[in-house]
Image 1 (cartoon, rainbow, N blue to C red):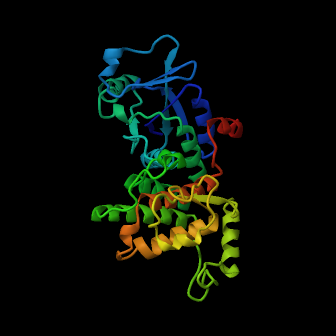
Image 2: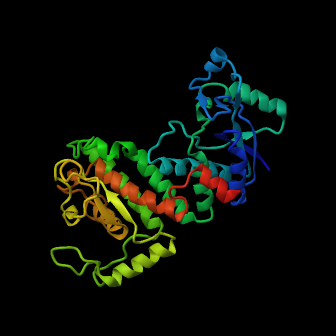
Length: 354
């Protein structure tokens, strides 16, 4: 069986956990000392990172109390190795809510069985700029591996992860910029035509990820979602089966989502029905609403159906970074909840996979 370099690096105290997680998906893995020597881990938990291969000679190897990382190897065929690596990297984008890793690996590198040939590869390729930057460690990677493992046997979930990751890569804002203490950070709208297209593509991909999970609103002209006039009121004939599908996916339909609304009241008019402000909203600059999960998904679908999926209208230019963030956050919550990994971090994984 061929063996592929994953370019995914883990600290020495993480690698056993990673093998345990991978084993649940029947991935055949082992590890070797990271040949790039890009990362150094201290006994107290500190990490140092080199950004250029030339620094290996300038700085030298590790200081006292430091050790190198462990490189994950995949023993499988190339297509499967590539799919595993790409899925882990896509899962990490979702976990972070932002594409933090600038040069994620996109394919495995087949390693020779001959140790001398491997050392030539390590010295002449892995310790040279280009592939050197592909070697990746990040604090969230263990959980990203767990997300990929949970999704592995479910192709629809795999596609949902890739679609949402591609949405973030198309357009997104950093999650920390949405903290209410920052108020309105971004312009809500733009006259830039190309930006309208990027915004629409990001929303379409994020909502399509929700559809892959079979968690869209199932309504039709014969079975409308609303029985209200003037204000939205769910039809029980649509809402109750919708809640049942959420429960079947392991998601509590009574959960709420904080729907971000900032600055002047120039959002899409549908938001006017969202009148329950969060406890931190000031009602002026920060007007975030607490929205039920079914309502949040419904609003995502409204944006997709009426403003982004078809020919653009005059309303399209009213979309901006806050709409993109809201739809992506709903899809992110659903995917992580479906994987049973919402608000789970490495220490939680140790208890689960011990």
